[in-house]
Length: 163
Ligand code: GDP
Ligand code: MG
Image (cartoon, rainbow, N blue to C red; front, side, top):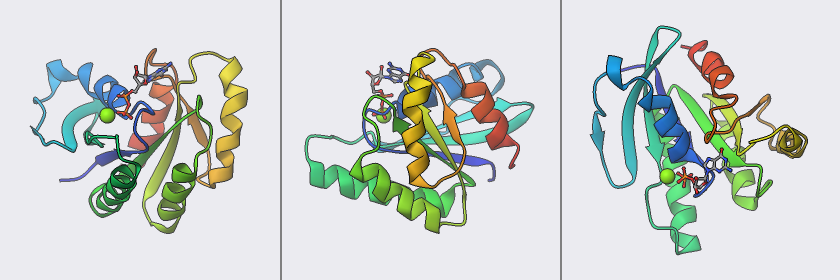
């Protein structure tokens, strides 16, 4: 299996909303989800004629800080092992958090293609706010709104270009 995208990031940044957007419009021409587990959900999509698999992570409970930090780290390590491209989602409403910095540090050391999506950029005013995520040192920022779909096409263009 190749062309695997793994979505990682803190809870509530919009990973599952993005996953649904990247898979749902392709249901008619791809298989149903390969499988669903409690903490990982698998889907398929196609963009610019290139098929990919996509893994949504983090369907776990978020009421304990310790549990979720451990879980996020585990998912990031799994993503580095299994995925061809890692989609790191952050939230412009919260700005850069300590957990974002920790995840970014691990991803910077990996040899994988990492794409950083600044989500919830629902309007142009929020583009300015997104610039603080350059501090994570992961290169170009993809400003997206998973809710409206804004920016997600450019993001997918860049990802499938590496496949
Ligand atoms: P996950 O925990 O990272 O999978 O995040 P979810 O996809 O479950 O989304 C968490 C919350 O953020 C939900 O209330 C979503 O409706 C909201 N959300 C997701 N994407 C966007 C977006 O682009 N803009 C805004 N304003 N809210 C969003
Ligand atoms: Mg989710």
